Length: 57
Image 1 (cartoon, rainbow, N blue to C red):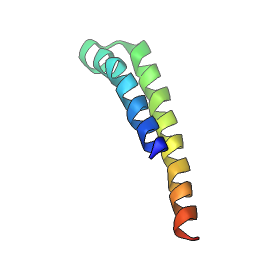
Image 2: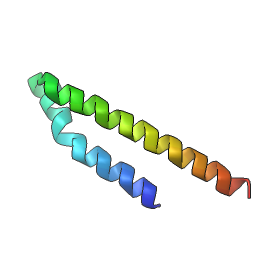
Image 3: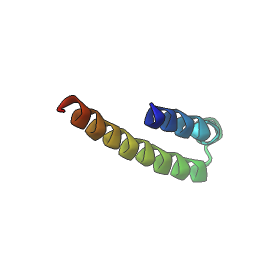
Image 4: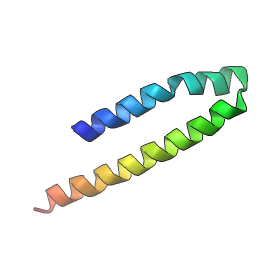
């Protein structure tokens, strides 16, 4: 569950950048969103591997 909380925290930390990018057209915020979403993707992959390992025990 710790990793799930990490994903939630990461997404919540990106909320301001999402608003800046989509509502105000701030391209620098878009770059931060893309980087943050890549971090979410990597964390999600780690969780998938962990769940699979636990499941196969």
